[in-house]
Image 1 (cartoon, one colour):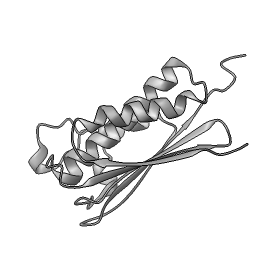
Image 2 (cartoon, helix red, strand yellow):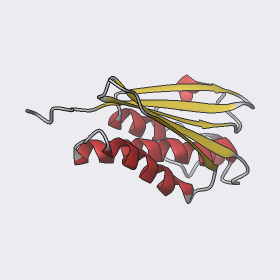
Image 3 (cartoon, helix red, strand yellow):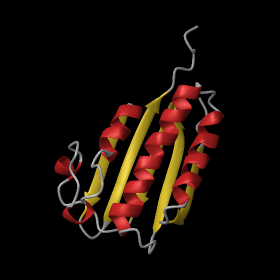
Image 4 (cartoon, helix red, strand yellow):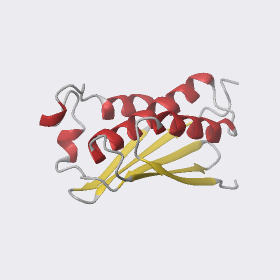
Length: 146
């Protein structure tokens, strides 16, 4: 099956979280997802972008986020959200439910847990001082129960 891809870069600002959700939803729409799948995609992307803005750049909007979207095998959506912010020192710990950094105590620490709940695979690559890339893969039920 033919592969389609989109790459977009935008400023790391909180208001661009909705923009990223809309782009991901528009991209996914061409694969005819269910409303539930579409909501799950938007929620996972929203969490990944929110993490990049808040934790990657500290809400300052002093950098950019790149979002890559592509179709795999006609029934999977690959979504990669990358920032070049401060990075994550301990990925395993950061992915634990309820974990949040010291300066972000008001945060729930559930971002990765939410992502894992709504997509089939979550991969995180990060290095302190270099940024973070979160890859989300969502399998679609292209047959919709038929």
